[in-house]
Image 1 (cartoon, rainbow, N blue to C red):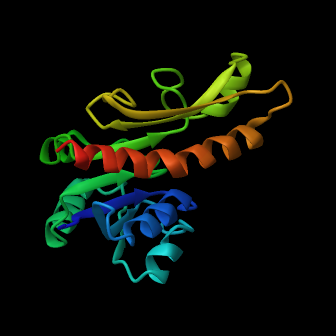
Image 2 (cartoon, rainbow, N blue to C red; image 1 turned 30 degrees about the vertical axis):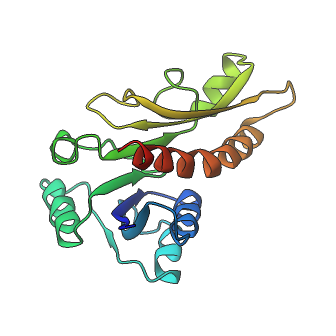
Length: 187
């Protein structure tokens, strides 16, 4: 099996990146992480790129033509698939057009509920009974692309934001790889 050269975009701790790297080392997993892009030069997740000798770059999203730098590097590394794993920037339409149905994102809620940021505080404020995560295709609208997979858990009265984050991340580590396998099994 020829694995799809994949780029993972991150902004922070990179725990989903680490999980995807470990999964990608399995023989039957359909992707190979070939590049990591971060918009945050202090992103802890870059440590995983270094540890597993994966090329990584920092993108200054304040620069006018930063999308061109991203596209240049994606072509340079022959990337054919993109995973957004805690990437806290909105992906440009230019990138979406160049990678139509080749970009997926993991979001810490049961979309279409709680698109965007601060999902856990909004879930608690709304007195939600269920939480979870959604892996979806990226399109021009924020957190609105077709759902690939969702995982759910029940929210207890004593759960706070920290517990919701913990429960969600545990599900994310299963959902992201399952979604990737599902995509390539069906393609």
